[in-house]
Image 1 (cartoon, rainbow, N blue to C red):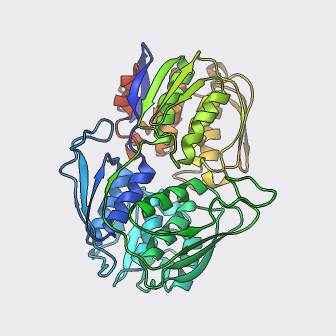
Image 2: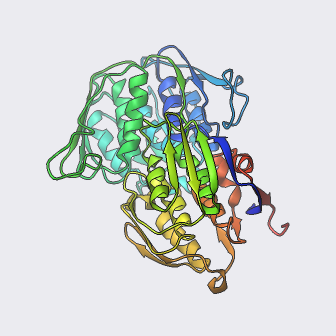
Image 3: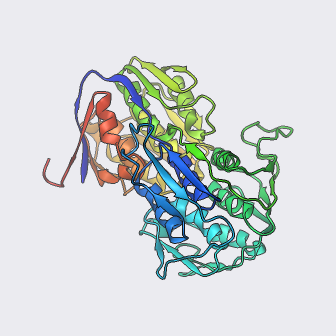
Length: 460
């Protein structure tokens, strides 16, 4: 399908941020392995989160989605998922076939450790993109905990076979590839026989995602000892790089609760970015001031680029005159913002230097390479670096190779490139993949005066 901006008028207004995909994944999975029945209010119902629902059902969780009456943008207080957990005493894979996780890397990585607690073997697979995700570092970290897990293709990537044996204990893992590995070990280690002592060695990327995991775990009744945000000499408070980070969790149980999923700063970046580009005022509700989401950095980014930001306890207001400036930004702890920031920068005045996101090469696509490839088609003067990119000059269709770009089946690229479509007539191939994380993307953009259409190839 082709995604294209059709019409723009009276841009701005008040809109609700969609629920957080990261928090929804974690709440689904933890509630499924808790004792008792939880209600998840305002979950994100998307292709990725439904992969977690399906995976947890295969391990015996009773998940009732019939009370959910919205795709996540404007649910009311009676809209929720009910999850009857399986506890941690009788975990068994009920599927005779490989469990298909579609394109959800979060589901794959978190469920791999939990599958080690099962009484029987589990095989996880997914689409062609998921089969490119590196898993070998997690598989190695599971061995000292008693788990025999392997890549069936022997290349460190899915399909992944996980055999029983997770008893817990001590292990370590490098922090510079995926925070999801760390979240996976912590969640499963909590309900293992011995608990877990985990050392995360060296540079710890995307630390905010682990902070979100700990936040949900604590909400479900778990006590955790960690030096996650300990300040060490000669290093930054948030990006502690000079030594290891330690986690210690004694054997415990997750306890069912009623849980409300907060709004998603990643998805809100497209709404805020649209008004920053076009000029106007927007208030996005359900964005919490004290959120642990690393992608809250989008507020600082937009402010540096020239917008005025007002932050309230549960909402954000942006005012823009439509003029954006290039900036230098380290996205070390917010790699999912890379496509958004690259698109904004392609419409800004002056250079932009994006650093710190080498790990973005291991997402749904190599996001550094693909952003550079597609923006270059649109006439951008752009340089690819190992850990990011430099955008020297922006979109210039007179010097472009084409006015067509492709999302490479990456939901964040599709939505980011649609921002460029606000100023230039471009066509985004494979543009319908926004369903992975933001099913109501078109409807939400319409609420702020931006009409976006989906068309069959050749039917525009």
